[in-house]
Image (cartoon, rainbow, N blue to C red; front, side):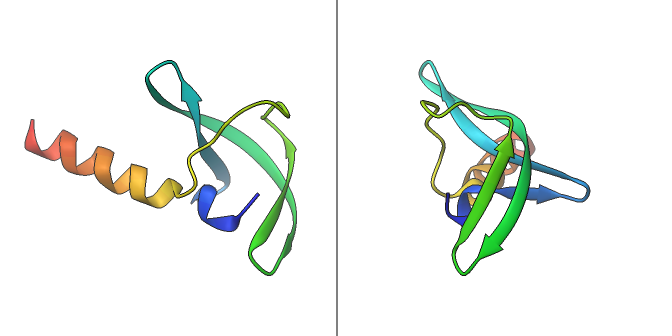
Length: 68
């Protein structure tokens, strides 16, 4: 998986997994980082689809919450 798909929240790391018509935050455990890729040790199934850029979704979600 690319590093851009993973969002670091201090000690926790999350990805946004496709769920129905949107995305949900899923906590993951990571391993080795090499260049633009990061190893996922647990938290996702092989068939799961995730957003390519977690930071973009986090920024978009924050913007939406601020407006409401």
